[in-house]
Length: 123
Image: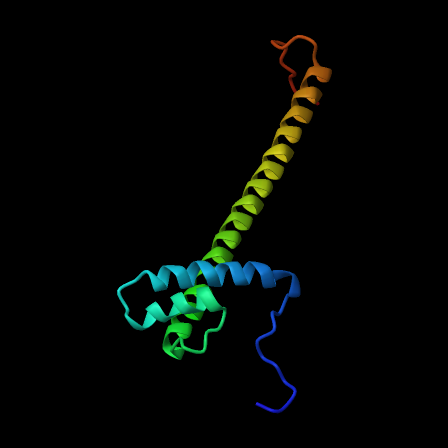
């Protein structure tokens, strides 16, 4: 990488704190696992320096973070699609209800007697 280019910046600066929290959650789960190399994450918690942590372990942390973010995005898409479908259904149902009410209103204006039948005129 060229000098002066830093690649570990958050794309959305406001999300930095949430990303750090997610990294802490994922790394604590990995550190409590059976992998002996993941135990090095304990030193990172205490000192804040992750140089002793193997890159394979940091890769596992990043991979799990990505999995969780994708799952959250998928859930958000599902919820948005469901809301849009419900809104479209309500709108269509509302239009059908309005059309039905208009037809009922026209019929009541044509005849005040609901049993009155209108016959076609003979020519």
